[in-house]
Image (cartoon, rainbow, N blue to C red; front, top):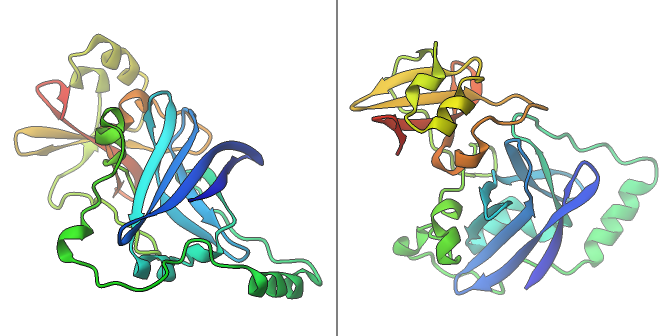
Length: 242
């Protein structure tokens, strides 16, 4: 088992544990609750590796991912030194090393032992590509619904359903039956809705530096690009989240 720090704004916000479980390496991250939609990145000396978007579980932000040996090599996981959280619509950029640092980093990197690379490659049984999380019963539902965005690291994304016609949500509070959700939704601006069969899709754009209004029910949503905006989308039927 290998432990890493999870940082946010230069301070430690949580921790991440990586351990081998059969053919897979399981990464479990836990950080202090934050009322914004954030994305977790693995940080190496030369790049930020997108991991996924943590969801609120038990008063903390949590994320669980499983990786095969091929995944780890493709994502350079053996070079990760720590993890960092950024607002979900922000793409961090690695600063160029100062004079003399680049050579030292190459020398240090060559001397490091890969802490997360599997000892040997094993064929990947198709049935084990399932991303079911090995977590406690209380966390299982939310952690297995990890929301991720498509990027160059082969991280999966739930794509925007094809076909819906999106329109401005004139009165978001009218979408819900629950009094607390109605009150919370009443302040949402720039929301969009679209019909999808017998249910309704509700997309909320994510804005840097702004608390996400439906954070308490964040685990019911998924990420998607809607009308060119990075959004969290919820499915609503008969006034309830489904």
